[in-house]
Image (cartoon, rainbow, N blue to C red; front, side, top):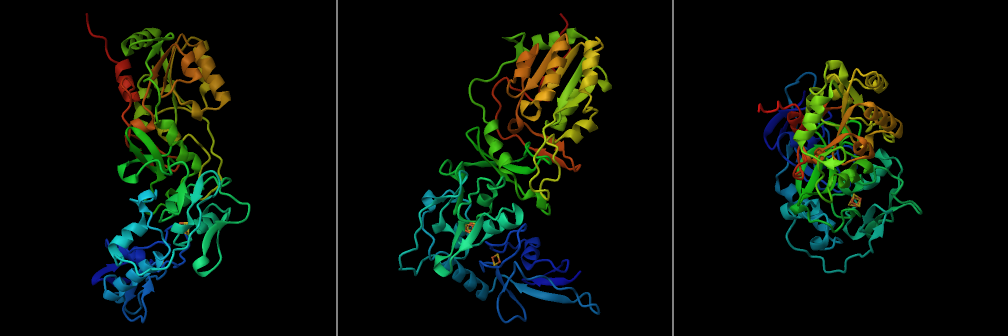
Length: 482
Ligand code: SF4
Ligand code: FES
């Protein structure tokens, strides 16, 4: 591997590595706007300029690559890069001045304030004052459909959003029109972003506050939000996301890109806007037995008295939950898997599976058998199984599977459903227990690609709502001797 020097620090990198990425590996963060690891580099913003020994002009580190080592001297230093010279500092300050010529000073009302690259870089690399005496260019904000709003006054023309719709989502809804100071990002006539199932990503990609989400706009200042690493339950691979929350309410989901994993850069709008499902409203749900509120102890006694137990675990829950649930089964072959949601694949590169049961593998590894619910129905009807415990979320089960589950529960002498929100199926069971949702617990899954993905608790569950392992502990407790 060729050796390069960055500010006199030597390192070996693969030939073809971008200088910007090489700098990052030694802890030097090069300021940039137009560069994005998942998009074609275009070197339009000029913010990432660095000095390279032997080159007459500064170079854009987002498009300059490390050359291979000469064959006769593999140890030779092939490139010397400087990121902290007066020439580089001058260039950055100059670029910032140009970018701010037309940018309004509306940080106090801008949603991006607090996570804005223009703010951050202006503070670190800008000059601190403005020589701009002329009137700034003005546009009214525009809706790009129901989900996205554009404020062109703030746009710095990095074209990340345009490249996203062309290279990633493919609809090409956005384009750059006009030239010079009239340059503007707009949609082709008659097109909006409403038909784009990945449109929300343009908001994350925009390094300034030009593209904002109608759903989040003006709702929360970002510095009040706490970010907790989690996963999306609404993707086949359990895409990594940030849960941004405050006051025990989730305000948004954002992608949480993993280093070197290109499929984790973007999430679909279905995943993004699913956050609302995890905010509880109304009174805390109570354990129920035969239609009336009951204690966990009463449900335990009823379950323990019922006879041989079979469990059905929906493969959208975590592996800890699966492990503990499995312990309730009277024998290892009485663990059944459920869940049959499919995901419509529109970007095969990012959605590598259509199976919406994201932890099917984790459940299978813990002895749960999928596609065998008919067999269980036979065993229940034949009297071999007397009680059934179902771990369930109605959003991931088709009407057909729901009907089959309903027959199983109805045929059992005793049925218990564990759910975060009571469904029709849950209400039809003999007993029901309230469990934490994804945002209220920590656990992990093993996705369809065999990757282990963890998620952490972000919200406090209401009193009386417990995790599956906590309920199983209660249900298997040995009654105190009298
Ligand atoms: S709207 Fe945002 S992402 Fe699009 S070109 Fe302008 S600054 Fe870049
Ligand atoms: S990030 Fe290199 S020119 Fe924009």
